[in-house]
Image (cartoon, rainbow, N blue to C red; front, side):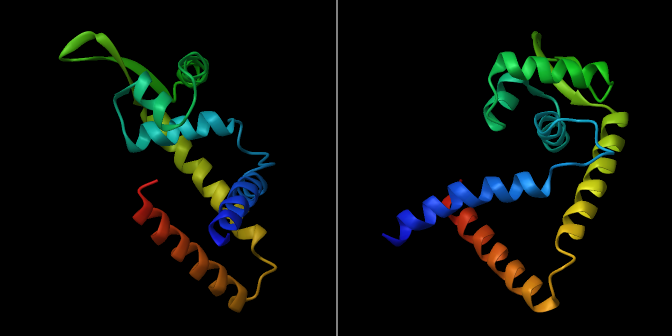
Amino acid sequence: MNKEKLADNLLIYLPIMLKNLTKNYPNINITKQQFDLLNKIFKDNKKTMSYYSKVILISKPNLTIIADKLIKEELIKRCFDPSDRRVILLEITEKGILRLNEYKIQIRNNVLNAFSNLDDEHVKKLNDIVEELKTRIDKMNI
């Protein structure tokens, strides 16, 4: 019973929390999906479209649309796999790295602002909970 309640709470509250913490950023002119793709390419540079489609859970056709927008903004580029020129890889550009860092700073500042009304004790409790959750999720290999 407790595991079912935990699953229900995570499914309900985590998406709400993430949405509320990452919405309404006037200086960020990028969608969440574009940000996710840009961030994943930064972490795992020069992988195939299929790879990114799987890891960020977006269909290949939708990923192509998202990638095309980032390519148009010169944040990423397509390149060929040196071992097989038929394989197209996505690579982050210097401009993409700079823009991603700007976005991360803005998002972090907005998250910090969202927590500004919490006192130190509540911040510590929440951080302890998040750290415990992180530890448990890492052990579950999700």
